[in-house]
Amino acid sequence: MSVAPVETAMKPWWELADLYGQPRTVMHHAVLSTSVPREQHEAYAFNIAGGKVLRESGVRAADGTWALTIRVVEYIEPVTLLTRYALDFWADVPGGKWAVTDHDTRAVVEGIYDHKVRIVAARSPIPVAAERVGRGPAAYYDVTDVHGPAPDFYVI
Image 1 (tube, rainbow, N blue to C red):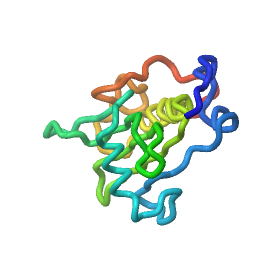
Image 2: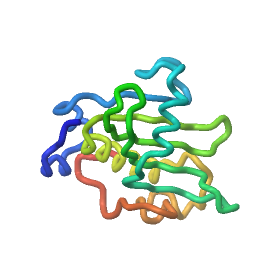
Image 3: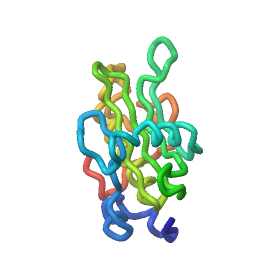
């Protein structure tokens, strides 16, 4: 596991990826080939679901269930048994929309999380009241830890 210095919190995730390596796609609803063989997806899904949630944003459906969730999870990688950090995203839309990206450097995944939370708030993949979309994460999500204006380097 690599540890990023504190100043990396001010960089966009793609610059962090240039420094610490690209994140890998563990699982994805629309991609047949990922960095992790399909035979191992259940093991990864189990470990990520049981991992430690470090950050989370979500939108509840009218019935109170989660309609969309974006989480940063610290988990034990089932093959190497090393600590990794995952961005776990899923939306309850027809056909389902879900993806898991991970990295061994938490700062990279945290940067992706911040970017993803802001992008989804601006372009909702699920039906929500019109006044919630385009007004930032605090207005869009029922639960979020992303606040304030987007950094200048984001194009949303």
